[in-house]
Length: 87
Image (cartoon, rainbow, N blue to C red):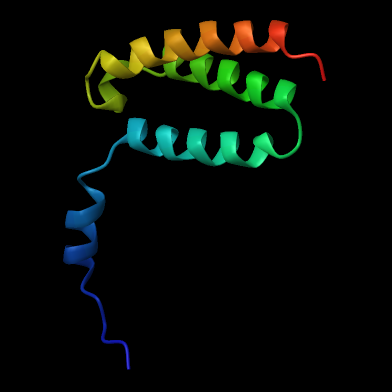
């Protein structure tokens, strides 16, 4: 039988993550989900998440500039992929 999990333990686990981690997980799920449908849709997802990473304020994303640079790279890669794919 499952014992009751104290909320303090759950809070300690969740406190380690920030919005950047959630966006990365959503990006991975969106790319995997759109990969089966269409390559152009996947390219649009990549570009959209690049814009989201760029527009999200840095203080809620852990204060690191790496995620902003990832957003810029995703935006460029998404646009290039969209123009090269011919679905």
